[in-house]
Amino acid sequence: MEEYTIDDLKNMGISAETRGGLPVICIRNDYAETKISSYGAHVLSYIPKGEKDLLWISGKSWWEQGKPIRGGIPVCWPWFGSAGAPAHGIARISNWKLDSARPEADGSTTLEFALDADNMYSLDARLTVNAGAELSVSLRTSNRGFKPFTLSEALHTYFSISDIANVKVCGLEYDDLPDEARPFPGFRNGELYFEQETDLVCQPGKKILVVEDSGWNRKIRIQRTGSHSAVVWNPWIAKSRRMEDFGDEEYRSMLCVEAANAREGSRVLIPGSVHTVGTRISLI
Ligand code: BG6
Image 1 (cartoon, rainbow, N blue to C red):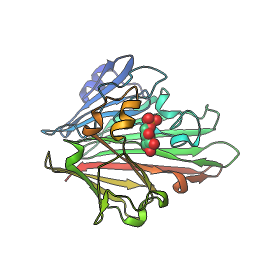
Image 2: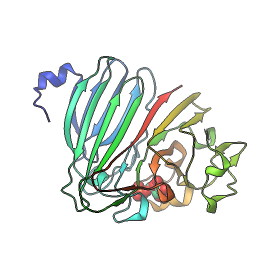
Image 3: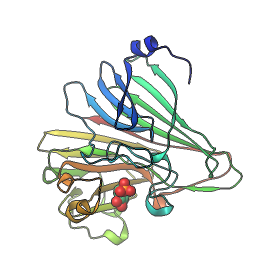
Image 4: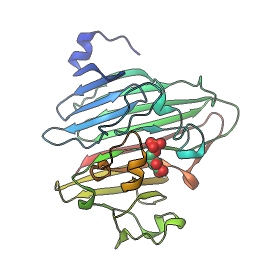
């Protein structure tokens, strides 16, 4: 990282704290208060001025090295789910380097984190977070090795909601749902409702999804870039009880909508090539 003094960072509205055993960077600017841990390059919280947090964190999350944080935006990389071990890849349990911090002309703030290709996959990752009127997160992967790599990934965003009974996701088409999930009882008239465990790796053509929450009277817009897949996940009752780092009733207050490249949406990176996936989150 460029050398910054404490005063430089303070002038940029950036400060540092810890949560459990993990380092946390706080950004305060005219738009929002945003928290990110360099452990996992993990966005923890994004609170636009005068609003509630758009992101959710479990009250039972681990806050320790070697275990993923439950909530915020885990970076699933360089594979999604059980395409490899550990589940959802190594990025979310790795310490990233804060590479740069800068204020932008529009008053937003950008941080860049790097994970170097000293991993066994010869892949470099760079995560850029811009906190402003919207939260923009993008993940760039470069293949520095000599073999093609099949990349699957997700910006596994946990949204905070009033109650799962009040929420629907708009923007998906019936044909976007995975074959094995169709017909899906919660999918009606082009809208996805939550009445059971929902774990859908969709391949939507449209790049914008909206989470409508009638309880808080808010709509969250999610715009994906470089993303073939959108994952929608709520563990519902039985799975919540099985997860050690998740409260039994917490499925009511969260919903994951993830910008991803997964399953048939995975990307093949030939040596020397670069791919970027991104998500832009805002209230409408
Ligand atoms: C979702 C997957 O993206 O992540 C689910 O589709 C999975 O199958 C969930 O259960 C949470 O995964 P983890 O490893 O954080 O418990």
